[in-house]
Image (cartoon, rainbow, N blue to C red; front, side, top):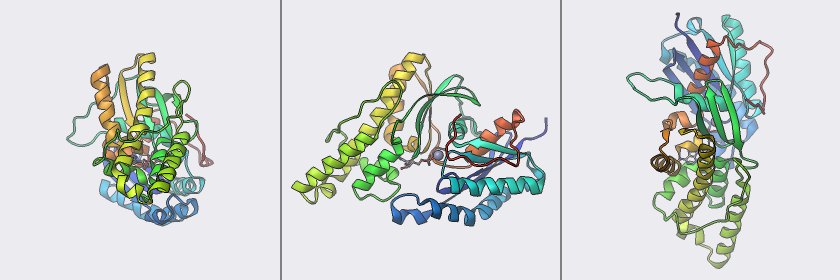
Length: 340
Ligand code: KG4
Ligand code: ZN
């Protein structure tokens, strides 16, 4: 069988990324993040689109060079069709279409969320990695999404539960913002929490039915808690930052794990995977490992570079769609919302 060489292109939010995969082996993965949003405390869609336009050619060029190939060698070009910011998606989609047309190579549309989950099937040189056995449960936690997914096959996934309001990453970022921690706050909260006492403060946890999540009430209760305490002591945040970070992190993580345990117990599935930016969180990783001991789970946690947005995940999803000869037409358009 001839080699399958896939170029993946990701531009759904604020990272412009390109990667090349040969027969599931990663050859290159380039991610250009966008500093410009930091000063605004969140992603500014219009600025993101412009930065993608500036970044996309050099990023793709570098990914191809590092992989030692050019467009003529590619089997297909995979790109993120959605979900994400429409303007940002448009840049990646248009670029992928243009390159596919000019090079006479098939085009593959990829769902960003499905791709996050498929990172578990990327192979790296000299690495013996276990991969999840089907069916497995994937807790997909990012800045925009929080889902519990039952994965029956590489392209056969069912969303068992999801957030009804904010995503877990959003909860991290919004609580961080309340404490004056710059965007994206999640990684900094994680870092500051290491020096804190996670049992010092407790916050009201909104209830949500079945396998769904709800985080907007937690953010509000955190906001009121901080506001009340600042009235008593203007320096409350600075004096208590590590304990505040550790306590809010514990609450966000426990709310995730509670639903994960419920779904595992009710479905009988004990192959458990994490994916998405928040799966980089050290408390979540430790929490899942502790539960693995308790419930006899097999746990799969991606390396941090595959947790946050990247294009290797788009390329691996492209690989599986290529095997099914599932190609997109040149009339394909990006979709801000996309189910799978
Ligand atoms: O998957 P991702 O890179 O982009 C989206 O598709 O949203 O996820 C980004 C999210 C942000 O909310 C960021 O704060 C969060 O992941 N994040 C973390 C950590 N690293 C990234 N949250 C908590 N702890 C971390 N270590
Ligand atoms: Zn993502």
